[in-house]
Image 1 (cartoon, rainbow, N blue to C red):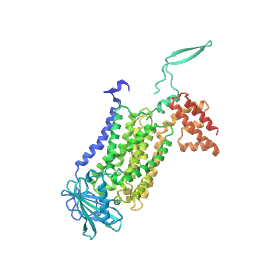
Image 2: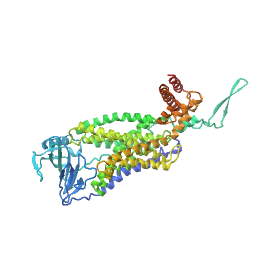
Image 3: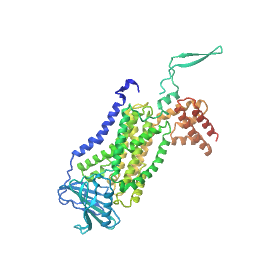
Image 4: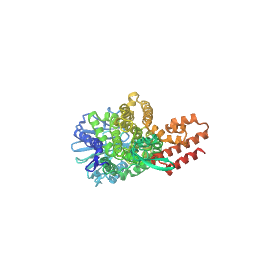
Length: 603
């Protein structure tokens, strides 16, 4: 770091982006939650109110109490109620929590299962959990008989009441004293070469004698040298930069994310640890083809693996657990307070996640821009990094959904719940965070006007708006579909958003990669002049995969020749990478790559 850019030992060039990122983080994790806390609940239960738990299960809460969570009968969201519907009412120093869900067993079995869950829980509220009374029979006004007991724990005294109806529908009431603290985990809804004008030696032969002179005249770099310099291809990535404030911001955010991650999982890991392990393993496997696919798309001036790993980590830990969960919970609760539970259930996710989650992921790109300015030099770099940040977010969110889904059957039948969630989340992952984040981060890069391309404000705003729109429509597809048709509307919305988002990501990728294609052509031009590659092969190297296949069909005849041509292009890519890494010098690695092109051509 040049001394003129130091202030108190830190790189002052990073102060502005670090301050902006820090300000947004504090807005998301402190200001918005504080606003939520300042806005009180004003949803008092009135005479005649009936709370709908779904599947025909209802209950009548005490008049005058506050409805903190739950849906009134005849005010259900258009998307219906979840299988594990929960309602919470509070008043007079007492809170009543009602949960419905599938359960295979008797009321006594359900009560025993609830006791096991609380006894094994690591949640602070459940410490010292103990049953303090024998089972007692309870009968509702509609004639349904259940079983109750009293318990005590660190959060106070409570009564558990369990009912089973129709053989497989279970429900449980918990009421606790005034010091019971209700904790809700909101699901995350739906990341130099310098000038060569130095002293050059020119050799002149005069009368058979070689002499050397020094010429200070600047020599213009070749097109290949300019491409290597402009692209930063082959430059290593160094995450640890003690003088860069953005490095310390990254470390703090990741550390905070780890702390929040532990808090999310530690309370119930004893009950749902198997589901957590299964989700982690299965979605870890699911990540592999995604990484291979994204690596395949990153084919022009490939990103440093460590840079992509840093982006993935940002999306998986701080963006998910530190930022998104915190701000999503606050905003969704505010929606429920201001517009009602049913409205928030229908529209809350789609009017929250596009803003909070895309922002939380994009902050990772801003940090990496400051940590690797020599590597993130064009919009396609931002596209690839954004995709990896989104992939990290997506995998973390999927594992979290599996973990939470394991409790839908009161902790029973966890393998079935895990498998169902893995299938659903895996299938929907094609149109998810990796895609949204790639589009959004590319747009943000264009808006910032970084790199050789300069600012493309129109393209940038379009990409950012499109990513948020697709994200919002995807999350609110059920409610939007019901506006079209109660039954078939969602089958109209989902295909439309898939087609539109895929078309947009293809358009954005092509626009973003135009500069890298030019660099690739310039980098390989000397190889064409030397006869290592043909002009057609160099031209094909600057094409995307679809255009490359069309080019081969047009210029190469026969299956075998096309197969050889594809191998030549792969070897040419390795050659380009070696040339960039070794700064255009004829190193052994470059010579080996050239020999490999020649060898493959002879197959």
